[in-house]
Amino acid sequence: MDQDTAKYIVDYFSNLLTTEERLAIRHTHSIIKLGLDTAQVNNPKAINVYKKAGWLSEDQNILMLLQDGYDAFELNVAERILLQNPEAVFLNKCPNCGKVARTPLAKQCRFCTHNWH
Image (cartoon, rainbow, N blue to C red; front, side):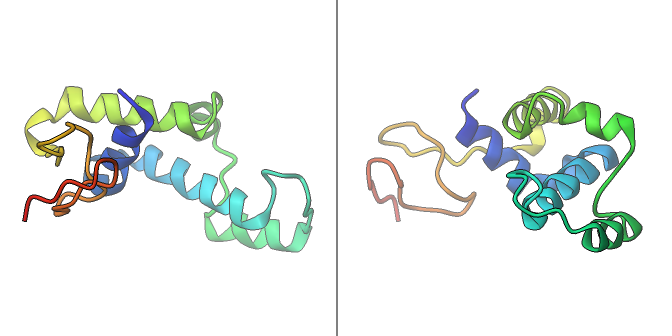
């Protein structure tokens, strides 16, 4: 599975994510927003606020999901979703080139610009 397909599944079929997977995504987005992924910003007050709000996690189970990076996490989650719920996932693929469209309702391919309205 490619990264575009994994992102498509995680983004548009988030109802199939587990609670831990949702928390891992929230944790990753918070790290990026705070700038902790680049180590440019180290604001202890903001970090504490995010931890108290539940946006940053110290739960080892959640951090283990992200240990190989977010891209690997997304691939693992998408594969799990396809294995457990193949009937619930609709991959909107271009009839011309076969690549996944940007959204489930898209009618134009972002890769080959084919239009199937």
